[in-house]
Length: 90
Ligand SMILES: [Zn+2]
Image (cartoon, rainbow, N blue to C red; front, side, top):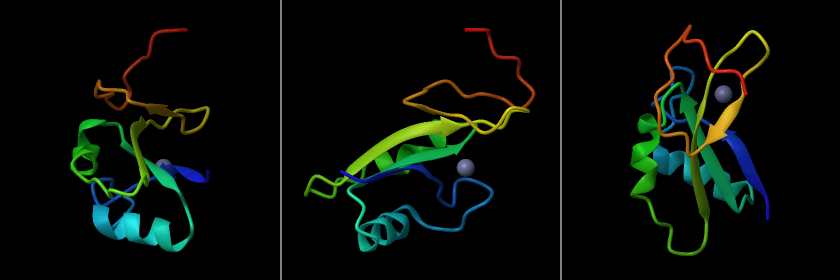
């Protein structure tokens, strides 16, 4: 199974693709699924929650944040993370 774990749509500031167009492109590339990880907000990916391809194409949702150590992504992170917010130490 091949999944792109780092996708954005028009709901992030650095992409222009509509959700369905993103899925079409992923499928055309032969992917079995995507993880939509919009910047700083899980809620921004809610349009993907209503999309059911009906054929097992996997759509995961997450969120991406920018840090001084990179751009980690978290799956199913339902809390909005604000820029410059201090995160608790693990
Ligand atoms: Zn990104």
